[in-house]
Amino acid sequence: MTDRYAVIGNPIAHSKSPLIHQQFAAQTGQDMSYEKILGDLEYFADDVRGFFAAGGKGLNVTVPFKEQAWRLVDELSPRADSAEAVNTLMLGEGGGIRGDNTDGIGLVRDLQQNHGFVLSGSRVLLLGAGGASRGVVRPLLEQQPSCLVIANRTASRAVEMAAKLQSFGAVSGCGLDELTGQEFDLIVNATAAGLSGQVPDIPGGCLGKNTWVYDMMYASKPTAFVQWGREHGALQALDGLGMLVEQAAESFYLWRGVRPDTRTVIEDLRS
Image (cartoon, rainbow, N blue to C red):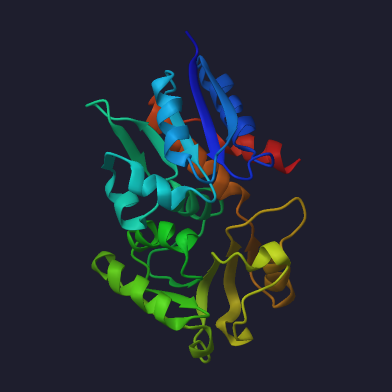
């Protein structure tokens, strides 16, 4: 009997997740299927429960349902709990639904293993204080950067997020206008500004000659933020395609107990 998995979101047609998981399954000899589900904006919980009741084994959750999934589950991993968002669902040992969040570990693995960036001791700037940002703070802090600054247009949201997560490391929050005079080793864009071709309004001085910039969004051509990084002399300007594949690999491992090779899949998606 082929095990059934899926990704649920709204919209969902653009999702690369089925392609990624089909490649992982072929690589590792797993008998599984993986499809896309257009989630109902009002009845998300019913969609999830219906999927598992029909014998489904695991779900990935994407926009706009990650916070709803966090509220829905019966048990949470520690990283999903601190993220207040869930992107991976499976059945727990007691038969309830268990939620995890693999976004942050996906970002960390892409930066460190695929690109060789050393987070330990680095000065990191995280742009945005929404769900995408909250999902990566704890995994970033676990790598022990010298500081992590969360900057947001509305300063209070960044300050509040930092206060909630300060037990995990050196994190602070501020407004975008308070960044003048600060330089960082890594600038991560977790805002949705790129969807409309915008770049967060940060001082050029935040970017030194050895600064890396990383956009959690990805597209077939360079994102607005990657373009901004290149124009301002970033040492490396990366998009989030590797993060997408790495978070998928972590979900796959949680479900199947096997770690797939991500490099070949990233190369294939790039081509």
